[in-house]
Image 1 (tube, rainbow, N blue to C red):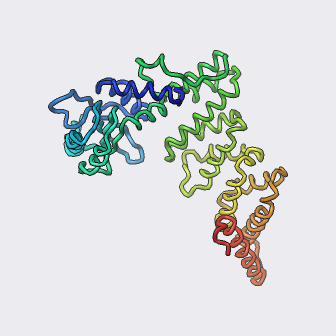
Image 2: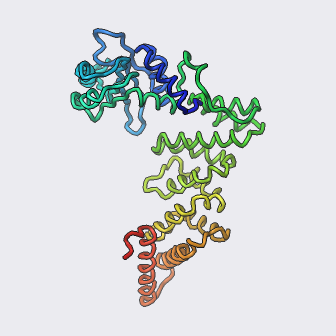
Image 3: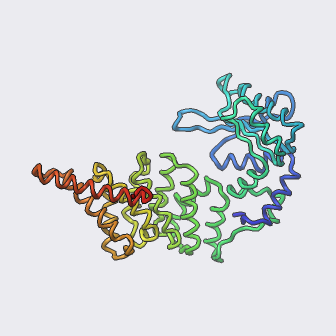
Length: 381
């Protein structure tokens, strides 16, 4: 993976200052879009008939049951007050002129990206947004953003490959290095093959820092797509490679709890989410105990949901039994515990006398208020 340092940044900027439009498309734009699951629909030659579209990408979006089209206008020319109107006109044309379809005659771009390897002047930056007709579906990326994308997606033009500095695994083991090579290569097909098949049948040992790299990749992949489908594969990997998690990564597991209690959790990932939650230990929870207690407080506040997250209460009890609870949270944990117990009584099937029910409801309201002040201390008078 490219080391994100100032030396590499300057090398990349020098490359972008010299690159042609064609090389920008071949060496930067196509690899970035391919990494995100897009395919090339059409690449136009420069000149008449281009209609503001140097290259058109598409991908199938299951949620919409339809294709998404992105038109890219690539530039290797500084945008100034003198040429900004021309560039804005190309963006407008890309929105208005239909994309030549393979089966349908009139397909319009879902997004138009103007990607420039050079910087824009302040005037050009300001005016371009106002000169385009459809601003919401227009994204403008200049040199600064392009440099960040090159770092993010590990896109390395061959002409500067040898000049750049790379992050390397501390391990000298060939197996470890091969794994790291696949991970930093950012080729989705190779990484899927590695995590879905190769490592599941390979019995060779893997060093701790490479295990950590695998877990980092899993969470990075999840961060890129929080949709139901986008959560499913990383959660499956996390379930299988759970033992790879290193102590410095325990805090990442808070995200699994947030997914578990989400209003719209991924149904495709649900089975793996449950299994990961079951595997999380009190020591791991201790790394993010303040945030975990807030999750518990919100859950205890909403008594009607207590039965919806049984694993949450199980993990809470396991943590309390571990004796790891900090002194400053003991009072809060007791309030949560009491609120959960009363909720269970009120929601349980056993009959409760009316006067006893009223006492429980009053006690629950008092505990609920205390939890509210724990979550929002600024509201306590």
